[in-house]
Length: 136
Image (tube, rainbow, N blue to C red; front, side):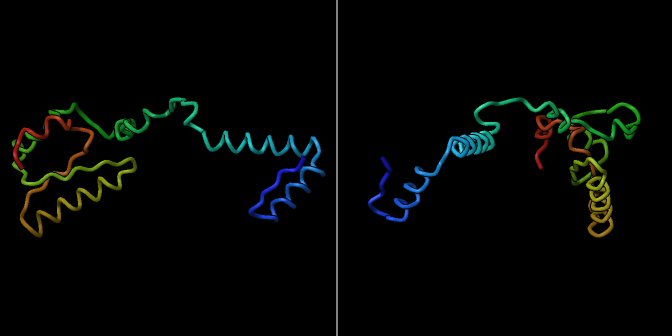
């Protein structure tokens, strides 16, 4: 028995033609394509596998390359502002060093053009919870 669609006669023709000429291989191939499509569409939602490289987001490659010499003095940005007497903070985060160079250049220009002493710091060096101890 063929499936009929009263609203669209074109569908009736297509489905009646498919049901007569479809063999086992055709049905198996369409089922395989459907299963592969469903697996791709639900990738990561039906089964959740933790990312083994998640820690890479939190690494600091500057340390691996020997960019940090000596121990960190303090993680409190308010104390660092008091020590340096800076008026402004520019936080940067970089893997390749581009943001660091840009932040240093911006801090230098702020001092030259506006007379504002700016402190350029790596955002991962200071904790967020301690940065609210001073009113800005």
